[in-house]
Length: 202
Length: 199
Image 1 (spheres, chains in turn brown, cyan):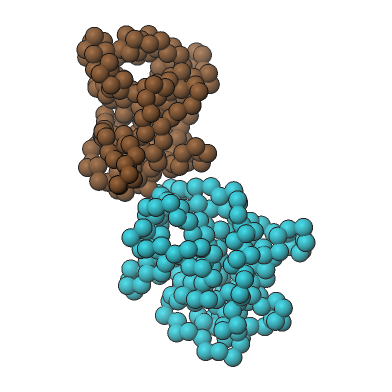
Image 2 (cartoon, chains in turn red, orange; image 1 turned 90 degrees about the vertical axis):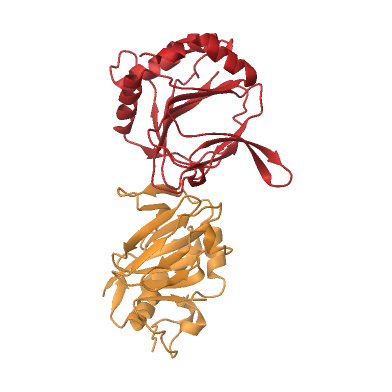
């Protein structure tokens, strides 16, 4: 697995991270790796995500727990993500993170109707949320499917703080242990696909 | 005229639809309001709480709805919720008689012990497709919501739109095009969908 050339400039990324403990990095991977990852994921069997007790959602998922020695691209990528990326993240964030104990790497496809309601990811274990964007098309935010950071607002219920488009070969990082970051993906209302891998380091 | 061969104790369609009353005009699609016996929907709603619905997405991604199919045994079992049996009797006896009288041909429900339930929730939709068979949709919804939130059944060739029904019976003939726009809010409507086949 190879990072994109610009992702090796960890000093610049660290400065961006320090400002808000939240950053979008792009490109994240070498473009060939990103394309191979996208194609490998798209070839998988996807299933509707089970309902969650903590957040209301609808999208499809492919879950991969990497097997040692498996040569499939998704396994190789998941092993790299959990075993090698933390050292790079430490250079960017100044903190050492570990992969989740279940080592599940979860990819999501949002299609028409999909959504992720506002939530803050807070729990006793999660520290750093990540979203790898593998969406090669773009659409306006009024059709949904963009990542939005929001905060409560007495007048309107919710105020938009920041919006990030679905993104090709992007990595969104945001601390969820030190900041109360409400975020959501508004319902996708057109026939496009938002492909991501997302989860948390602990 | 509608003729329903059943004793009163077994009748679960509304009194207004019982024998002796004029059948509504049939042009391939009709909604019967207040079609179920008083109290039946309320009982059924309680019995159906917490059923294990799962999101089903068809291959063409044209039909994204939550589904749960209940199959009751052939003989009445008092250990199982009573409203389910009332629905079985509705499907076995009264619905075929009612539908046959309205559509003008003898139809029946092939598997009245099977209750295919569909739930519309945020994210659900049905693209414009013709009904594959004559279909009865028994509305078990709760409170109504505006059409702009999606989830209403539209018959585009007829300029008709029905909100999710409560105590309604919709009859839609094979080939009639219908669609359900994307549900955009956290609301829910449950309905029982039954194929009516030649008797």
